[in-house]
Amino acid sequence: MGKPKFDPPTNTFPYKIAKRLNILSVPRKYIIDTGEGMPAYTPRGIRKSALNSQLSDRVHDVSWPYLRRFLILKKTYKQRFNEERLERIDRMIEAANATCYSKLANCVIDLKKQDTKDVKKKKGWTESEWKKHMDYISQIAGPKRDFRPPPAKRGQSKPLEALLPRLMQISSRPMFKIYKRLSQETWYRNPEKVAPKALKYVISDRVKKLAVARVVPQPGAFD
Image 1 (cartoon, rainbow, N blue to C red):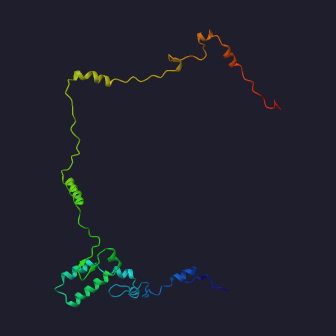
Image 2 (tube, one colour):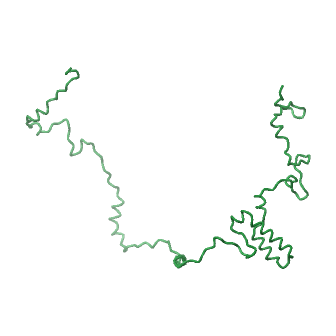
């Protein structure tokens, strides 16, 4: 018989336990259990499992402070720190220079020159660039534009008696178009009635010839 897939229920846990759950319930090796179900901590509040872990290069590079802080520290305490401590700060600056983050931020420091390598530093402007710059400065330095609408221009004043005819005209009800039947229109012609001139019309031979129906050949007539 093979190994059962479930562990039988016990008095403390009256359910079947799957084999997969038993495998997942085993703690990993790098987790140090104190016996109470929680990982162990040092007096400073650091996990003991974190002290035994291997530090990746990315985390090591990110852990270095900004180069600007190193420079401020060195400049501020240059007269107070001894040579050994200043040399240690220089070594930390060299180590921080080697990280990819310092190179991407373009803030690599040369300790011999004591300046920052600014690769993207702009060159001197040409005459055309200065002209464009000064034109823009003169444009934005002018007074702000007043976007308020201009005052309305009104004509000469008139007495009310002169305006009454126009007021009565625009206040009257408009005359709507009345749609009539076709039979009530003046241009309508009843198709049932024959015009008097049509009764006096004399038909020609040509019209008689065209009025004769054409002989349509039937299928199978020429077989």
